[in-house]
Length: 406
Image 1 (spheres, one colour):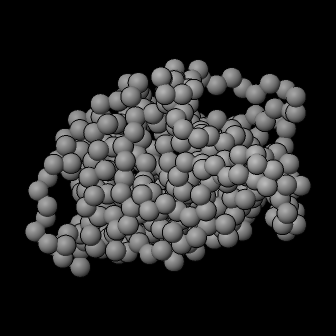
Image 2 (spheres, one colour):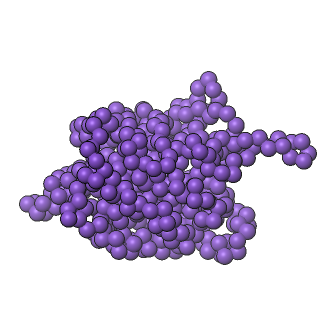
Image 3 (spheres, helix red, strand yellow):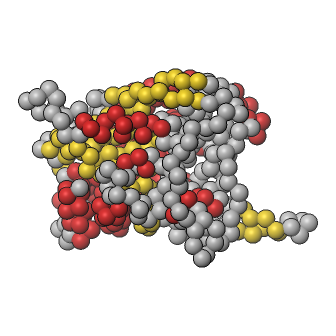
């Protein structure tokens, strides 16, 4: 905690470096390219919605691991856990109670938020026939088997040169639902983490502290993959094994940075009058000029103070290094894989919109729908995801102490 607090304050208020040429962070940020980011998302979409427990989910895990190795992030590992899929009609496992929500402006949202303004319904598509693309319908035909079976998270680690016993976690979830391609939810977050793993694994790139790049499974069923990691690994932090080896299988967590659906910020739904005079609300067709990267922490978590400082440090990194879109900080982080970590370590989540207040009000009509396909996003949408990648790369590079050896 002390490390992230001190570094975050320094990041937020440090004087600018003398020149971009002398700044290794600027050099690395320039390695992020729109076409490479798009290509990684496109590669993920060949596995359809990557629903947990299916063959296409396992194939996507294998593909992600192979890609990480090809980047030079070769020390890949998998964490295994058991997950139980209830039969249709059986009650789902109970979740932790939600955070009290709602204020004077409107009905309650999730994570402590309030739903303001125009809203459209949200939900999960469970009807394969709503997918007009027969190829996608066939690709997504297999459903999660009922009962208890093995699941896996895949990750790789950039080992720090001076403090390998400490690390930052950079993560996203790789599973999706809805009978689409899960291009945005969460191909966009997964591709972001993979692109950062590629850049930090480039020859000559060193960091003082370790960085672990994790792709979670079972986010859509209740953050089960992330929760399993916390349960299995939290008590192993900072332990050298074997003793005297200088190796730390689970370095001490200094900060957790989660990503989830990064591309679509078209704004609040707007009214549309039909031929019958009836008013409905629809999402604006274009990415709005004032789109931003939303950085959220949870104000009621035990690590709220450190999480807030981490969030503002990332906002400062965005101000300095992002090229197209700004960032905003909010305090209602919810429904994402940083939640199981938030009482143990400073934790933040980056998204296209605030999860409770905006996504919960229908600001993304593709969320969990058959329309979440690669072709339904424009370069303006992909560019928002790339700017989120610039933000995280810059923030983590500074926190971990990056340098480039020639």
